[in-house]
Length: 301
Image (cartoon, rainbow, N blue to C red; front, side):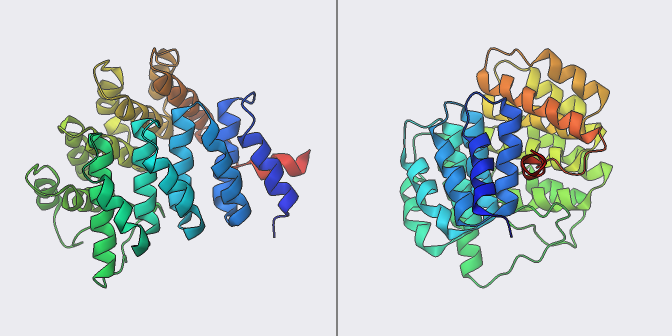
């Protein structure tokens, strides 16, 4: 058992705006791993931050925890039109990840939001909840243990069959996401290269999710494609952010060089993403046991 005082101490790191962002991120993921009401309370307090990137990750972590006690704060963030689009989008995705039937009404309300990324996310979240309500169960071979916006599709499909669905803009985003996660789960170079084609899609939301998945896969063959989107100044900053973090997960010397070039980007969310990604590179190339190490550091002190 983790003592309440320890959780509060980690929460103090997360909520201390004078601490380096990389330390606050590690504190956040430590709280996610601990779970429970106290951890949710500490994470929720951090939504007063002026960093869109941090608030985006707060919402992501609350969704991954799949605890209904986070529904209230996530609904509040989705409804707050003054929040950045990437933050509201992540709150909607987190609501879908928790999957509680009682939040369908708010997702229905915002599935036609003027912010396209928010509207598309609400639509996918609704489809996920309806899929679960129809009695289906998520029994996939997800090697990353992440709670995804949609379940994978039929495992018997080939890479080419999945690629066809994945790139078909006439299909629903929910179905295309299902093909995306099936391609991810195959973990082959062929499937990774198929996924990189999605970085040219018309939907910024879709491109952002592709970058996230490529970060999970950590395959060097995707570096040139992630680099191209990160370097494009006209690219949606939500996509550029995710490309930066994916490069941080791959963590080769080439990735480090790319990230250092954009660590002073004009867009704050891109700049901060490169900062976090460089910390991830350092972790991936070190003997550290875990990234979410705030509890270890607090106990050491």
